[in-house]
Image (tube, rainbow, N blue to C red; front, top):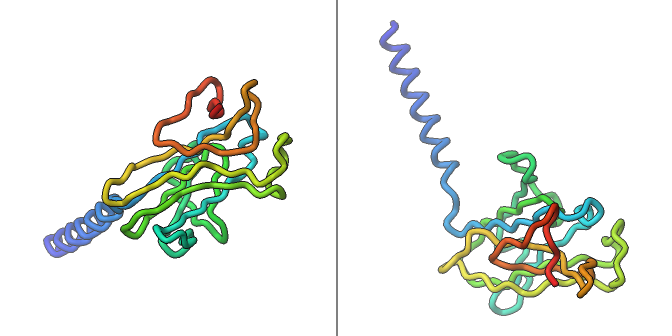
Length: 172
């Protein structure tokens, strides 16, 4: 009876271990979009993902599955409900279908509260071109700033981490 129990125990344990290992393998086309923390009020302003295919079609929801996690609470995966957004300190995990994409982020005027900016138009980022056949694993989103270092109401996407001093320095 002990031998049967041990065999069943090891069979179940090895099956669970194999299932866990499969879950640890990442999709080869997974991209992490990380928005490091900024000043507390800027952290609250969300930017929203826009994902376009090669023909310029919006495929934000059809070409990728997305989850997110807070950098301060790693390994706790959250599901997006209706929109795909980033706040300061959030990492988005995109599992993309193979292809070439144009990635950008934006913040509409009605979503800019509580941060007062001189730019009350829609905040837009540059366009980051992404190819799943030669993928980056992580890209960074940071706010933009004017020549005086004040947030100017825009976003910058780059494959390099932004400079840091207490908070992420905005892109000038």
